[in-house]
Length: 301
Image (cartoon, rainbow, N blue to C red; front, side, top):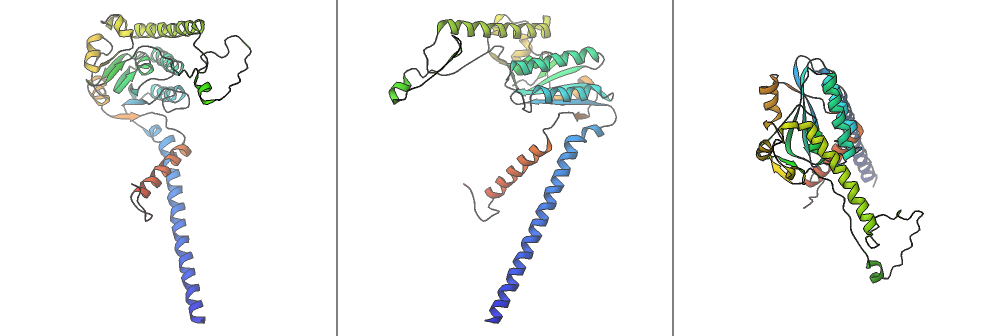
């Protein structure tokens, strides 16, 4: 009995030691990842030396707090323009659009930077898509490049919702709505559509659409060869966009840096999200991958 107790104690000590080693390794890996991500986000681009072409990414939905939000993109553009070694700036766009206000902020800042640094050209390069707000941003560049299969355009404005008139009665639910202001319940999905309110919304959308059209015409000028169909909300391929004047030529960011700018080395000035968020995302994705690979003795199918 004593021998069994001693053996069990030794096994418990070994188990505790093994777990201790495991958590020490895990802590070390965690701290290493923190330092790496912090360095990547704060210092990697600032270490760039020598002449190069600056790159800023605009990727995803253009909205406040997002990777493609105005604050993020504008900071990257300013860093790129302020670096004397950057011979030109490329804004690579891959976005279906988003907030017209956020897109307007970016467009305005691009124009300001071009005026402040007239000797440093700014090129927009469209990847998979630059639609709606994505194209709104692109037209502020000196020139626009795209791939032949890129999707470009969607120059329009939309607002959508649903109507559930009568649904509450069918399920036997009584809804109680109190408002101050005749139209405070504007576009309420449980009320019949009010034509006066619908007309107001249409005028609002038309106003924003007119602003969009004006920005496109201001940016593209005489390059536009298409008619009013350009502003109908339709989209075109990169090939068609060159013909219509929405895009200047076909080419990737690498092509522009090499053949247009003449500085093949590209340095990324895109502002990354804060390191805590990025670390959390990476840990989450790493844990998911580990589970899927059966690392912990189970496999998710």
